[in-house]
Length: 169
Length: 300
Image (cartoon, rainbow over all chains, first blue to last red; front, side):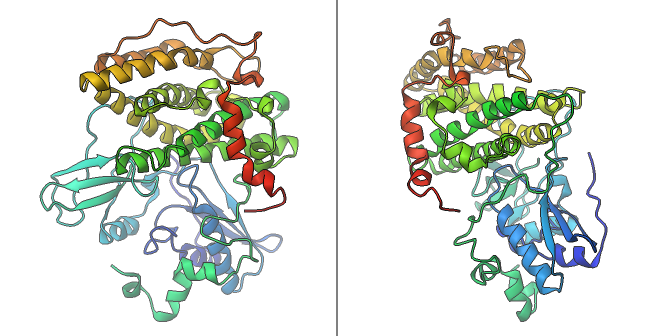
């Protein structure tokens, strides 16, 4: 596993504040989508972002928003590039990201599974996260997929509230 | 916590993506959320490694890209017709994952032969599509949907795992393909689990659900064999034994019988990978390509 390595440059700080289009209280830095933002006199600012899922429709929005923020901050030449490898992992969501997810009622992901061999077939119920509303561990998975590809749907057996969780990946 | 609590009023404008959209800072390229497509491999080093036959790489990426594109379209046709809201979101998400994989793979192939993903998706003829015939099958009911998805995602997951593994031959020698496959593995694992749990639930359910699931298995079984045809352009293959072990685990838990039907024969030695498709394919393309062909200079 390659940990996110990013140099904190002025351009990085501007790009880091870009909100995620789906959950605007989280930034792309919180989500681990922003990989780097480096300035060079030759190319201007080159921002590297990584998609959460192959089909993530927010990538284009994120790229345009990053570009607009950097332009407003005075960086004229901005290029946003995609990085596919290593693939994004929910382990890259920062502690601040976990806190903000819980604050908007979305259960943060558990640690991503570590595999050495083939992906095992998972039958039966997957573990369900603690309820972000009442904190009860007594919850159940109601659907492996939710309103976006990166989330699953759960219900709390204690308070009865349905909630979303970010799937560990 | 609301956005307002976290930011000053002047920040609100900057932090609201919908305001940013309205601001049209993107030279008018976006007219709605999610539009304004660019090359999904933007910024990725797409040079073909030395020693790799670019033609074979293109054909293999089209094999896998077309499988995903056509399969995704078939799943999209299910949306708004599924038995539960949870299945709507699941099937739509699976279709979106496959569409994302298709975009990356078509962009990989297209980058080598100087075509865009849209040109490949919308302006090729039926005989130029290289998907297996399993991908174009129209599911008659929900049982066929989940049985077909179990077969397809089990095979595709195993193939993507082999393409993304850290061996010398990973990505069949292409780092871009290896990266695309590594991303896909996580997605396909969810697809396979979803399909497997439904096959078990239906197979081990009521007499009616069992009968329908067994019928789906019997119908689809002949189409499954094509996944294992040895093709001259396949840069990686799936171990049939490992595939069967997964499938047998699910069928046994579901109480379903493994059919004995032989694979659907190729036509004159040619099948999906050679551009020979079933009757269903023409109808899929007619629908999928209609907007792009009616407005060939449109951008989105």
